[in-house]
Length: 105
Image (cartoon, rainbow, N blue to C red; front, top):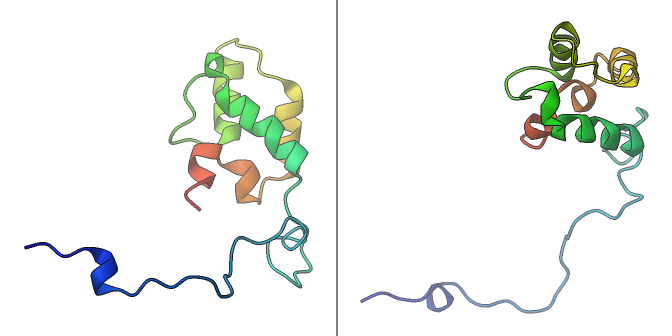
């Protein structure tokens, strides 16, 4: 005979919850009190849009810059501002990796 989870574990209602962080809490690099600036959301939106444009080829298994270079070599004319943005942030994983990979981090 199967028992329900609610019979095994007590149901707790009310009380304080941690919940997700508020928008302003992580605006300084992802950690409260951090001295490092976080990624610019408008720039990341531009990069996510680049990830979704399939005419530049698949984005799995390669960095965004590698994908941009591959599309350029194939004559697909990817936007130059994407490359410039990626070169400005070469050491930041949120800029370097495609959105399919950064969601795993």
